[in-house]
Length: 261
Image 1 (cartoon, helix red, strand yellow):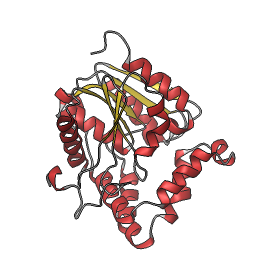
Image 2 (cartoon, helix red, strand yellow; image 1 turned 90 degrees about the horizontal axis):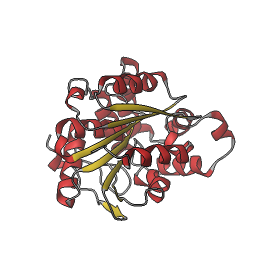
Image 3 (spheres, rainbow, N blue to C red; image 1 turned 90 degrees about the vertical axis):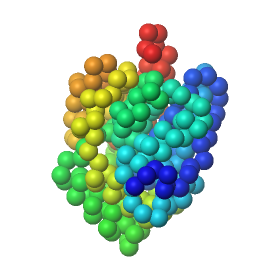
Image 4 (cartoon, rainbow, N blue to C red; image 1 turned 180 degrees about the vertical axis):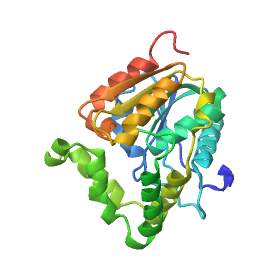
């Protein structure tokens, strides 16, 4: 499938300076980045909703992470926002890796947050199951299990408004759009292309994320010639939301570092 068959997102641009593209995770939309956007003074920040998420329509057929990366490349080129620093969380982190590997001329610096390059068998089975069940059962059964993966127990117990915002966004999502994204996650395997990444890379992970993501963060940082690893603590899969100050400090420090081209 060509990325041209995907619904075209609206690209939102805020601020001025070097371009930074932010790619959100599964089940939410570009509002995931609101606090980070406010913390990125001195940059032009670009965000959009993946297909079937937020304000972007649901595709008529399944797609792949490769399609999403091609779509991101087209959006950057059409916007004249190249080369860009590219930041992605989970699903967005997979898209960012593929974009940096296959469209290296478009990516100046890469930030991969709480993301694998390929899912282990048990998680592939999870995505397969969700792809089949979500169009029938809807998104409600997934909300609390997702919150438990995304946030620490303390954050959940505190009834933090950030958690409620995520619940609300999930609940408003399109079950078919979610299912198509799950199919893309089930099938993705970027292990053969990671070696093509040349951009300086910051790998970020919550220190209490699920074991596959902890392992993937260490492996990616070790496998790239110009990469470093930063932990957010205490944080699970949504460390960007649970520890926004830590994340913004790590991100801006990396993006503004002298000698990183």
